[in-house]
Every structure is written in C-alpha cells, then in structure tokens.
Image (cartoon, rainbow, N blue to C red; front, side):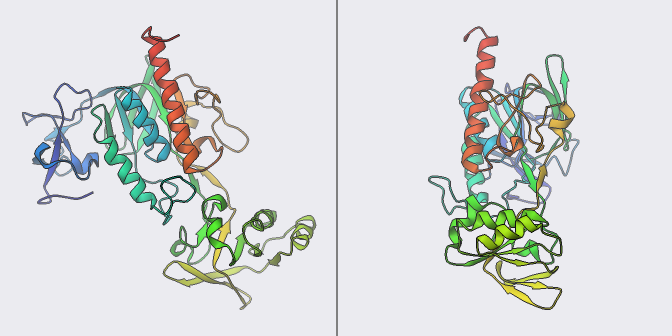
Length: 367
C-alpha cells in the first residue's frame, strides 16, 4: 500500500453514491473510500482519484455507515478471494475483510498451482486483489472481523476498525496458524528452507539432506514420509523420547535419529546450513520440515457454534461447504481438508456457487 501525498492526505477511490458499500463522508460532497484504510486498489486509474483527508488521521471527517451486504467474506487468502470473485460476478454485494495474516505469507514461492509456479504468495494475492478492484459490488477492507452473531435472519458483524453491519450470509476463510518450532533462529529460515508442507516444497530438495523435526513420534512419522521425496533424511526429536516402534520404522527406512536438544539453527540469507545441538555437535542439512501442529487462526467458527471434527477442523456439507450453522460457510484451511492453495481456490468457488444458489432459491429463480 502506498501513501500518495502528505501524511494527512490520501488518495481516495470514488464510488457511486448509491452503492451500499460506500464510505459516506459527513463533510464532503462525494462518497469516497480512503485507499489507506480500504487497502485496494493499490494502483487505481488516476482519473478516478481525488485527494481527501485520511480517515485515520481525521476520524471525524469520514465515518463508515452501517453496511447491509449479501455476503461477508472473512479472510482474504486464496479461498476468500476466489469466493469474492465468483460472488462479484454473480452481482452480489460482498464485503471481504482481511488482516493480511495468511498462513503462507512467509513463503518465497508458490508451488503446485498451475500457472503460478514460482510466484510469491504476496504477488499472487496482490494481483488477485487488483483483479477484484474492478468489480463494483466487491469491497475489500483491510481489517479483522472481531465478532459475528446471528441477527434477524442474517448476521451482525463488527470489525476491529469500527466497520459493522448486517450480512445475509457469512463465509469464513480465516485459515490456520502453524505452530513454529521453538528453536533459536527459526524465523530467519521459515518459508525459505524451513517448511511445514512437503507437497508444497519437498520436490525442490531432491538430492539434498533434510531434517525432519517433531517431538516424540511426530518427527519419526514425518521422516518416514519424507523418504519419498529425498533419500537422505535425519529425524530430530529435540530431546524428547521416541517410541521403540517408531525407532524400528526409522531403521527400516535407513533414517538417522538425533535425540539431542537443539541449541540453534545456522545459515545465511534464509538458507539453512546446519542444526546445532546442545551436546556441541551439529548436523549439516539443506532444509527442515516440521510437524508441530496448527490451530484455527480465528475464533469466529467456535463463537458461532460451528461443529468441529476431532482435529479441530470445521465440519461442512461436502456439496455446499455450509457448516452446521445455517448461512455460515467455510472454505480453505478452516476445514483442515487438503491444505493446498489449489484446493482453497476450488473450495472458495464452490462455496460461492452454493451461496448464490441459496439466494436464487430465495428469489424464486432456482429450485
């Protein structure tokens, strides 16, 4: 996002006054959207821009009127953006709220997605947001939804920036948060040479040595699976006990086991070179995959009472992606199905079609 002018002035994108998604100014003649606060489009056409006081700098000048929207999409990752695209093409009024904390934001490249191999997640999402900016019924707001409650046949919602309103349907595309290993230096390598997804990044390590990190038997289970991608794998249990059964499996597959506690990770420019143990020894390796678990990134599904499975994923109808709460849908990693960008895109589109069909039935246009 770029600030185009003095710190107290922002360029704003004009919207039609009759739009239910307008930001209504109490002191200006035109209805405007402050680009600093809305967050998109990053490069709108100059002829559609006007300069206005930034509503963060002068909150009294521009206030958000309560919104009545067809669909509130919570989360602007692949699933949420895909859903917003389809719903916008169905001419549904959509508000997509996103705090830009996507699970794969640390990754350098996308793999396993046709047409996008090697692109950064940041570029992928930026291009998607710019594409959506051309749809007059979709508004993307950079804010976190803090509360959603059933209200009068729809859902009342509130965002961290004060935005609020009523949505007829809600799509949760809030994703998961990976529990990073508590290792000194891991942040510098995460997304570059320390990864959580073999399907996303395992292919690139052919012919190299990898470490499999996980406490107890988790690391051993991961290490055995990693043998399909690379021949040289070492399991690191970080000072925790590994069962005899797991040790036997490691031996059967020619996988080494390091039980010592890990002191730190070492390398340069994001490239892992060695794992240092508290014993004073080290393990040279080119990368690490870890199995430490993940959790829901948002409390909203739990707050709404959506049923979950034993893994904590939200249970959905396999056809519609609707949850146990009528009118609430999920897409992407929230359901903890197959955790890939390609699947998230498909689930977002699938949920959007189901939501539009629900509207069509209500409008008497579909059985």
